[in-house]
Image 1: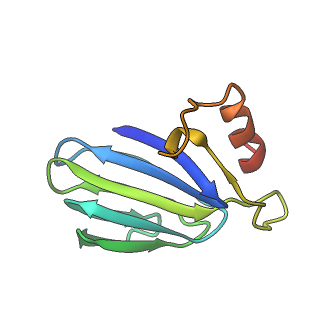
Image 2 (image 1 turned 135 degrees about the vertical axis):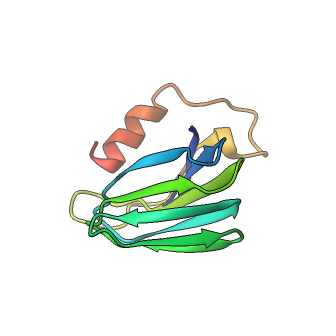
Length: 124
């Protein structure tokens, strides 16, 4: 599994690439609802209660908070994006920020403190 991470404004985007059918993101839980955009391929989303559902691109999936979920590719070269608002410890959406590494109008590279900012924002 490969990842590309970034943010703009108060929106976090995490690109996830599953190379082969059967590859999986073993799962995790979120504190807030979020959307996952399935750009290419198809997946099975398995929830902790044993339910599952299959999705085929292009579409999106709503992942509810506090639900452990696993995403498994059903086709080679599957690509999906987790998208959610950046929030502070109180659950409030944070102020607008952006990383220059994803801005074609910027000649800058990744900031020295990029990951420290991300960890602070996400309270990791």
